[in-house]
Image (tube, rainbow, N blue to C red; front, side, top):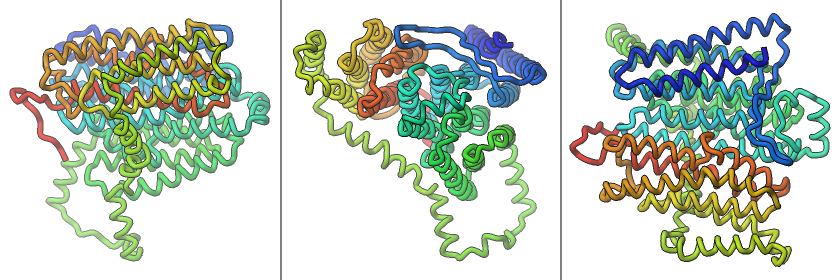
Length: 623
C-alpha cells in the first residue's frame, strides 16, 4: 500500500509529458490524454481508498527520496496519506475528470486548446503533490506549481488586457501569502532541528515537549501558516482577488477558484491542525477571520452583477464557515463541507453561461415585481450603507493596496539612484569588497560582523524593490533580481560557516537562468527597440512564441521554481538563519517573494497582452 502512493504522481506526470509531445492541431488526441489521465487517477484513488479503509485506515507515511543531505540538513520528498488526503484526492480527481470532459467541447477550435490542457495537467500534478505532501518542503513544491499554473490559466486569453493584468495581480497576492510558508518553514527548522514530517505532528507528547519551552515560536509558526492559508483561500483582507481570477475560461474558473485551489487554505490548516490546536489564541483568530469573511463576502455576493463574481464571493463565504469549523476542531465536518462546496461551485460555474440566458428569458417573459422580505425590516439608512459598501466590495482592493503594494511601490520609487551605471560603478565593487571581507572575517570587529548579514540582506531587498518599480529598462530590472540573490548569498555567508556547496546549489540555477534571460532580453531589444520597456503590455508572444516560452522557463528558474537546484538552495540558505534573526529572515523571504513578482511582471509586460502593432487584431479593453 505504501509504495503505491507514487501512482497518484506518476499518472499526472506521464499525462503531462505526453500532452507536451502532441501537436496543437491534434485536438482529439490532446483531450483524450487529459481525459484518460484524470479518469485513470480517479479509478486508482477510489480503489486505493477502499483498500485503505478495509485494511484499518491507518495513516501512511512514505519517505520517498532524499534529494539533498548534508551534516545538519536533509531535503526529502515525503508523502503522507490519511483521511484528509483521501477526501482531497477523491474530490480533486472527480472534478478534474469532469472538467476534462466539459473542456473537450467547450474549448473546441480555441487557439489555446493545447496550452489549456497542458496547464490543467500541470495544475493537477501540483494539486496531487500538495495533497500527498508529508512535510513542508514537499508541500511548498506543489504550492509553487499551483501558483504558476494559476497565473497561466487566468492569463489564458493573453491577447486581452484585463486577464493578463488580473493574472499578475492574483500571482502577487499568492506570493505575498508565500511569505507565511517560508517563515513557517524557517521557524520549524529551528523548533524541531529537522525537517519535521506531518506524521510526527500527531505525536502529542513530542509537540507538547517542544512547544512548552518555545511558546512564542509556536505562535509565530501558527500565525505564518494562517497568513498563507488566508491568502490562498481568499479570506479577509485578501478576498477581492478571487473575483478578478474569473477572467480565465469558465472551466478553469470552476476547477481553480470555485472548487479545488481556493480550498487549499483549509487543507493547510487541517494538515497542521495537531500543531496549533492547543493554542487557544490562534484558534480564536482563525474563527474570527472565518466569520468576518463569511459575513462580508455574503453581502458582497448579493449585489454582484456578474454571475461568476457572485459565485466566487459565495464560495469565499462558505470557506469562511469552513475556517470556523476547523477552528472549533470539527475536522470531519470541514471535509464534508469542502466536498459539498467544491461540487456545488463547479456545477454552478459550468452551467453559468446557460443560466444567464435562461434568467434573461425568464425576466423578459415572466416578470414579477419583488415581494416584501426580511431585508425591508432593516432601517433604510443601514440598508443603503450596507448596499453601498457591498457594491464597493468594502474597499478591500484599496485596503490591500494601501497596506501592501503602495508602500512597496513608494519605497521602490525612492531608489532611483540604483540605475545601470551606479550598479556597475558602486554596487558590484561593493559586492567584491564584501567577498574580500568574507575571506578576512577574523579581522572585522565583532559589532560590525554581527550586523553585516542584515545590511547585505537589506541591500538585496532594496534592489528587488527597485526592480519592482522599474518602468524603462527590463534589462536593469532583470539584472537587479540576479544581484539580489548574490547579495542574499553573501549575507548568509557572513552569518555562519557552512559548506560551499550550499551556496553553489543556490546560485547555480540563478546564474544559468539569469544569463539566458539577459541574452533573450538583449535579443528582443535588438529586434524591437521601439517596444521594449515596462510601461505597458506589448504582446510580443505573437511574433516570438518560442522566445516567450523559453523566457518563461528561465523566469521560473530565476524565481527559484522547482525546476532548478536553486529551489533546494533557497531552503538551504534559510536553514543558516538563526532562530533569533527575525529581521534577516524577513528580508530574505521578502526578497525572494518580491523577486518572483517582479520577474512575472517583466514576462507579462513584454510578452502578454494586446499586441502593440496595429496590423495585429486586438480586442477592446473591458471595463
